[in-house]
Image 1 (cartoon, rainbow over the protein chains, first blue to last red):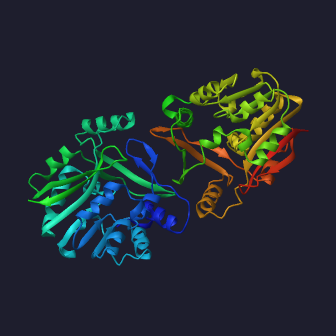
Image 2: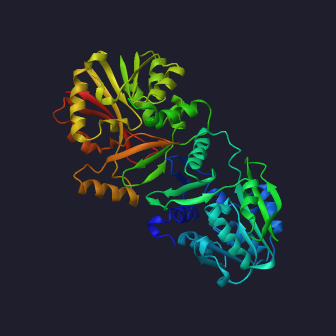
Image 3: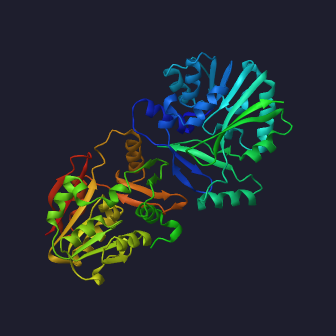
Length: 244
Length: 244
């Protein structure tokens, strides 16, 4: 779990939840820094989600875990729809926001600690690019195999990511090249969130093309069923992963 | 002058000038990071300035130098009003933006290099908190004496700054305390501007209360004439400094 001074993301969500006008800053390990669309997007109601995310919810069934639930928009929506929805996050303050917003089931833990001890799930959701929490291709395979063992026979993963090759931003293209030189996947971004004096540790966040995803899936017991492409954001898509 | 990779401020202004939607990030040396109101404010037309800044322009006369002219809003306004207005800045790209926007006289240099070699000025303007470019109280006195020798007998300085004590922000209050412990003035902020992968070097930017300003002025040949307080921003004010 993040210590309080590391919980930049949670403090950001908390401030927004208190009605403060705040913006999220993300810093990459090459020095690139940017202001994201958050936190508004992290609190958005279902009606305001991009269409491909709304459509993705049709693939959710049964008992659900929302990995990196943030302010809880996805878990809250699923709970309203009648699912037993558990939100997990490594940010204590994010979970506090979720509870205040009415999410009944939350657990503080990083995605890598998710295990069968929490029971069997029918759907694992990783929306808002949260497939990235697998970190890198090697850890992705390890986590996907774990996910296989903690899901029901008809279990699914509904995961959002981004094909990073669909860009002409010179900073991003240079970063892909930097990653290749270091033997990393181009879309393996090492980032941290900053807010006021709070800064998360740097963490790896993996973004993959459909081809890269399918290569990762090999031998994990998962296959890509449906793809839902974003109409708004180039390269962003949801993959619905099925067993077998 | 800033090297290109240091010219975060200039690249920000340049991107905005090209029509890109960009935001300025400022990082303080205690790790505090924030998104500022720029660059919109740096391009604002006179009609859209806060009232105290508009009023400050009534005190400008004759030949003017705009210290840290940025995107040139002040120098351009004064040029339009018929003044001979020179803009100086240490950002090459900021000056390029100024020229493209029609500012006829620009010189690339930091505020500390401003000297009599550029001729005699009737007014030195340091708007948008740019009194801060004096850095610290000691350097402020050295620069103010220099400014005395490069201005006409009726010369003026029209300078904007901020009384930092008018805050209840715990991060800022902790920073004041940190400065005191280090023998610095509470409002002596060490900051850098970041944009994409560009980062300026850290620089000292001094913000002073009226009492602190008057203490600094002692023995420099300048006295505070008029104060114009901001109605929008707590503690922000323009000081019109007169000789004698």
